[in-house]
Image 1 (cartoon, chains in turn green, orange):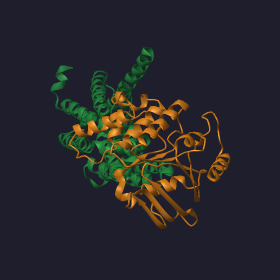
Image 2 (spheres, helix red, strand yellow; image 1 turned 30 degrees about the horizontal axis):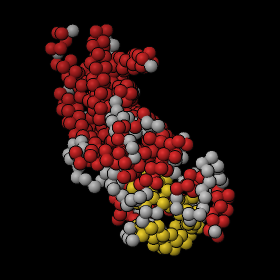
Image 3 (cartoon, rainbow over the protein chains, first blue to last red; image 1 turned 120 degrees about the vertical axis):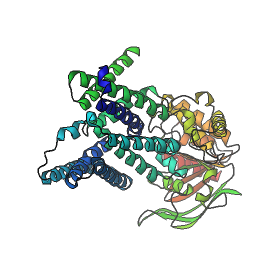
Image 4 (cartoon, rainbow over the protein chains, first blue to last red; image 1 turned 135 degrees about the vertical axis):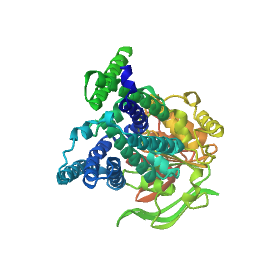
Length: 267
Length: 245
């Protein structure tokens, strides 16, 4: 195992895993407390359209997925603020249409045989230096924004009606949370893939929620748990030659089961 | 100065009037109860008082100014305090949400804000729960925390929407005793279905069903016992008898 650490791609994978874990701990907490889990799932699948677009026009994948994810987030923020009762319909819509666009663009790309699996289930061992730059920049921005506007975000998440009475711009912060979760999804796709993103945003957060008495603690603890799951998952993935994204999620799921079992025994 | 003056106020969401020719004067340190059937316009009037909705015609003055200009002087306790019970948030953080007066530090909370929130919690008798998770409290305790949040800005008027709707009877009594105590310094306006308790504590009652009927509860009027339950028709009869007395 130790000699594996000397490989560049393993080092990159470890750094990427920790960066994505930090962001998904922060944003996953917001997604869970704002009941946006399904919404983020929709955005994650929509980004496939961005993958297709990027491959067809030959620009970086991150750019394509970010574009699609942010577009979907803005659209869903608009729906939430104006037609909340029809949200599930629109989530289903962006989910499928995004994927369809992606597949058609890939069909149209001459001579290209895309490795679909790496986007669906992640390809953390193929993280490049440029990927790491993008991930670091995003991690710093998201952690920065959330810490500076923590109280507004907390107020909007806990009681949006009261927040707006206190003069907080609720639609703005709601949209901000959605856009940040869309961008988190974009970098998390590299690690666990777009199908498994939701598990990374929810499993550590669910455990952390039970153990925290404040949103800030929940974010920190989720980030920590998420890092542990990712690193342990990577180890098993390397050792037994398993798909890394799926292994990470299974490590998380088993931990969650153990946690719930222990919690039950203690009570 | 009157706390609230409403003159010839009309309001409609679409075509039909929801409120018609509302006239109301609330003096400082009054304890006003607003009653009436569902859909009668109680919540609409409350939203107008909070400056969330503007009247179609007529005037409304809260502490001598338009409602939205005096927001920090109006404390508001919303109806449903059982939302987001799982939310990981400490009691004191909920209370500090009410605070907009103080300067905010870049990160976290300032000493003044913490002191102010603890003071508000003390007023409602909840200071020892400051670091507890909000979900671990009972309905009545949570409601008192929401009142503390509203008290955080040192309001002149406290508006409460159905404060006892989802609380057991002991909790209800505590809330009303608390309001009675706060009423020594603050004007209280409470929307409630909880007629029997309202009659024991309020000194004015406004019945709203599109139009407003105003009743003063004078001292000769005997409030019903806690155990008695009144429907709104009986309640109105009681009030009109009382008026003639």
